Image 1: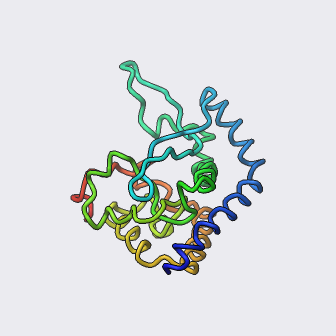
Image 2 (image 1 turned 30 degrees about the horizontal axis):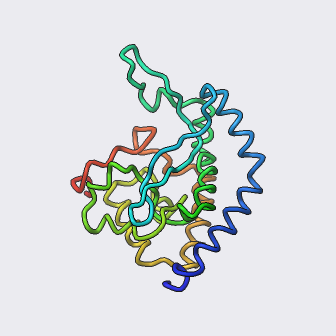
Image 3 (image 1 turned 90 degrees about the vertical axis):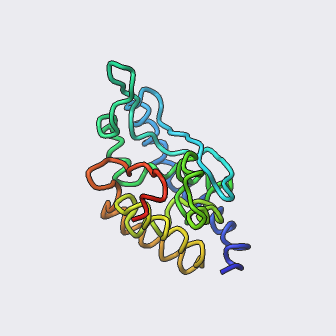
Length: 206
């Protein structure tokens, strides 16, 4: 495990992500144009996220929601701001394609715990914080075991289990299961919501 995670995982990430981005470049261009039209010239979503060791980087994804606001100047709900193009991009997981650039740069891995919000950092307990011992991933063990449809407690347990069990065969297994999940469009949203509920601390473990 240590040999793979310490010496081979990063080269594999770079080669595979660079090759995938080249192959998907036509899709990348088309989706960028469609979202630019749907989102008033803003096809990308950039946000600070904690990476390995808690170091902050800017994750890049396709922007699936517009910036519509109510009369008070507040953003409308996620469901109201999700565009038709954005819904399709999210359902097919095409919104993850730009993160290949994060992998190429070495900020992310193809497989690992998903990079969450910076504001969650002080809310983690000692065990949950271990998810930052490795680079965050485009997909991960939690994603193929429920993605946004599972509780925060389950998500963190899967993340830490992955940290303790990294191997080449496990990464291959996760990639294959991710492909199946994408085609089935499983676990994209939490029950009754377009996005997952915000993490408020360890009380959400159960």
